[in-house]
Length: 117
Image (cartoon, rainbow, N blue to C red):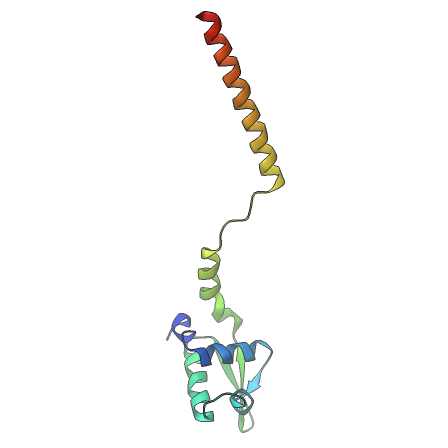
């Protein structure tokens, strides 16, 4: 499963939000969700397959951590959708200068045409 498919499920998105705050145990992640612990474990396994989380064994418990590097394809995709930055003051100044130059050139050209006519 890739990262995009993994994020298609709202439960998995909820788990990632919880893990963004730091490592969590399955029991902690399942608390407050309307699904069973085995279902949470299944979602975590899918997130791990997508490279978004990793598990660390601590005694009898597994602690899950968000793998921020796994978010890179998602981040790159979203950044590709973002509009370019608005015009900077320097760009606006350059535009103003160009408009003045073109206006001046047109006036000069129209005066030259009138004088030759």
